[in-house]
Image 1 (cartoon, one colour):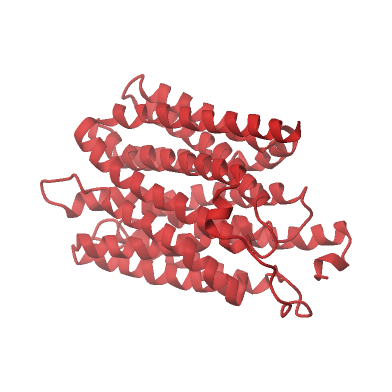
Image 2: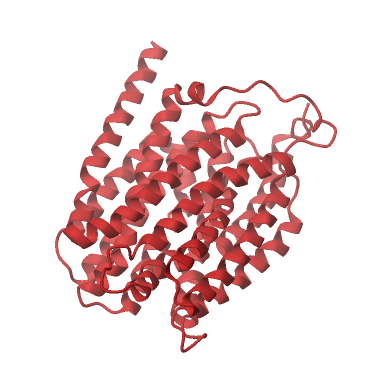
Amino acid sequence: MTYADALTDEQENQIAKKNVWLYLLCQALGGASAPINIALGGLVGNHLLGEDKSLATAPVTSYNIGVAIGALISNAIMRQIGRRKGFMIGTFIGIVGMILSGLAITAQGFWLFCGALAINGVSSGFVQQYRFAAADRGTPEFKPKAISMIMAGGIAAAIIGPQLVIYGSDLAAPVPFAGAFYCAIILFVLSFFALFLLAPSNLSPATAHTPPPPTRTVWQIFSEPRFFIAVLCGTSSYGLMSFVMTGAPLAMVHHGHSVHDATLGIQWHVMAMFAPSLFTGHLIARFGKETIVFTGLLILVACGAVALLGYDLMHFWASLILLGIGWNFGFIGATSMITDCCRDGEKNKVQGINDFLVFGFVALASLMAGQALNAHGWMFLNMVIFPVTIICFIGLTWLRLHNARQVS
């Protein structure tokens, strides 16, 4: 019997809610580093490169590779030492990465900057685990709401991160952009101290030494249709978001808009990514996970359609807002589907596999964004949305038919 088994549902949810509020704070602080890395990654890359700008988004790719690696590292560490200590290690990695990012810009080192953003990505891999950690406690009905609440912390992140870019970039003048990375150090320091208040997420000391239940192999986990389709939709939602968002600041500047306008576009986009989280969990509880994922994919289609209408500022901003909302529905819905696929003792393995695949694909998408933008332009980036979403629609339809056959 676990500690959670000795509590009533109400008591368990009360403990879960306390943890969720702390995770939400840490998500807001740690998550604010993502807009800094993404908004400035391509711009700094463009600044540090010579005439050939085709690798301008390589720093963002390095960041996303770091996130994929961080997903595996964070799960392995937390499996051994628990959530609190694991997240604290993630905040320390974030501090180191931000310092190196600023120093790399000062030294005019493009590849050093790529390496620094990879470290920042590893730290963000830890931040990504907040949404799963929020579902460690609480009743099954509470878990989707907990995940949604954590993602709502991105609303604050969407404000904090871009504002640090706008007001902090010149603090290390005459070196451009470095000041924003130095300012971000404060975010991880605050997260570190907030984590001291966290309640235990896993087994009680009385049961912590019981033998773990047998777990499935990676192939057995993948052979479960629900897991496979959840990964497909989550990876596609996040990959498309990364593909379009990574190219957006460069495309906006290329088509005559200012860096300030491009940064504000990313801010509106990130807010759109997380603001729906205030009610996404309730929508999932009412309409079902697959329905919300399907809706998110439809919104991504709308994003591509709006972007194809023109190059005005409103076209960019409107498409980025739709991109954020579509990502929210698609990714949170898919994440909730993933939690249904975890058996006892498999939580870290399943979550690690999912995040490694998601952010590995995101890294590839961010790299291809620079190449595609340089070779084919902004419109091509948005046209890619349509075939990818069609594949996901087919997968969701197949899953629904598969589940119907099993019931009958």
